[in-house]
Image (cartoon, rainbow, N blue to C red; front, side, top):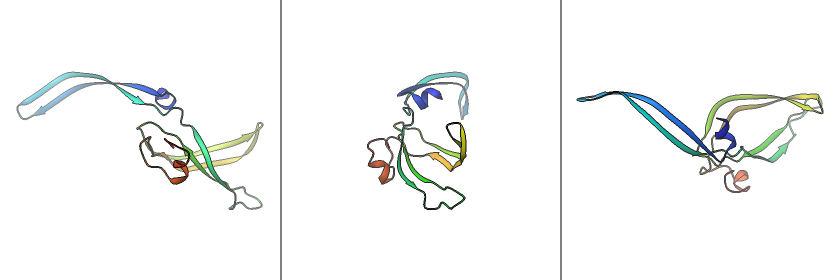
Length: 123
């Protein structure tokens, strides 16, 4: 998984034993071994496209950020759930951050939103 996220190319090994019965055809315990090379995610580089603090109050800092993540691979990841982060600056706790319903749904050949398309190919 590490190579798939960090590298330009990642090789996945597939190994299985096939048991199939369909009409007169029967395959029992046939080994299947193959390797697939996939374009990796190249580290998932990100760029901030917008910052908005307008929902902040005198007691709470609320930041809405537009972030484009470059995914040149053909792999999408959905259903990651909510990400929660603790923010620190110079070892001092600054607050919590959440990213609700996280996903990486756009692949290198997919269509992203206009703010991301302006950053170039793959965003």
